[in-house]
Length: 244
Image 1: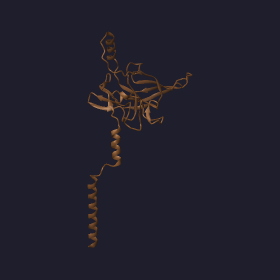
Image 2: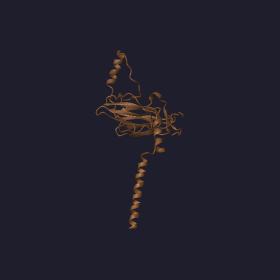
Image 3: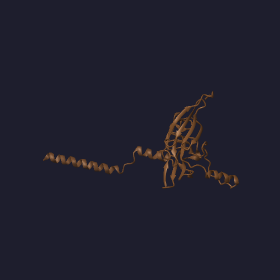
Image 4: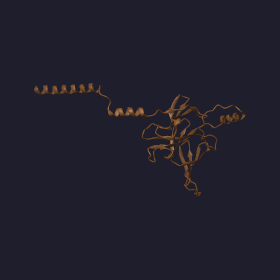
C-alpha cells in the first residue's frame, strides 16, 4: 500500500513539473539564436524588382532582381542575400499568371542574360531600356525588323556562383559559369562550369549555340545543343602566339 502511494506521488510530481515548465515557456524571451536571426533579417538590404519587359515572340515577361541602380559588379558573401548587383531574374507566364525565378536562390551574381535565338549568325547583348522615339522612316524600318525577328526560345546566362579568389565577395574577378534556360526561364542548366572571356556567342542553326571563350593564351570553341542543354563538341583553337 505504501509503495503504491509512493508511485502515485511521483507521477503527480512529474505532471506538475511538466505543466509548470510549459507555462513558464510562454513567458520566456526569445533565445539568442532567434534574436540573431531577426537581427540578421533586418540587416539584409531589400532586393529590387525591375519593370517587366516582354520576351520577344513568347508569352512571357522578364524582370531583373537585385539592386540595379547601385550595381558594382560584386556583393559580399559575408551578408548572404545582400547583393549590389543582379542576383536573379523573374519570369512571368502570361498564359496562366504564374511566376518563376531563373535561379533557385539569390546567392549568385548574374553578369549577363541574352535571348536566343535572334537572327542566325548574330548574338544579342542589348540591354537598352525602352525609349520614346519619333516615328521617322528609319525608326519605322527598325520596328519592322523587330516585328519579323525570330521568337526567343532560350536564354544564355553568364554568372558567378562561388568566391573563387577568396576575397569575401562575388565579383567579375571570380570564376564565371555559363548556363542555358528556356524562353520562360525554366529548365536552367549549367553547361560550361569554367567559362573564360567570351570572344563570340553565335547561333549557327535554330538549336545550336556556338561559343568561343578562354583567355588570350588559349581559346576554346564550344558547340551547345540547346534543347538538351549539352556540349556536343569542345575544341581548342590553334596557338596564335598571343600571350596572357
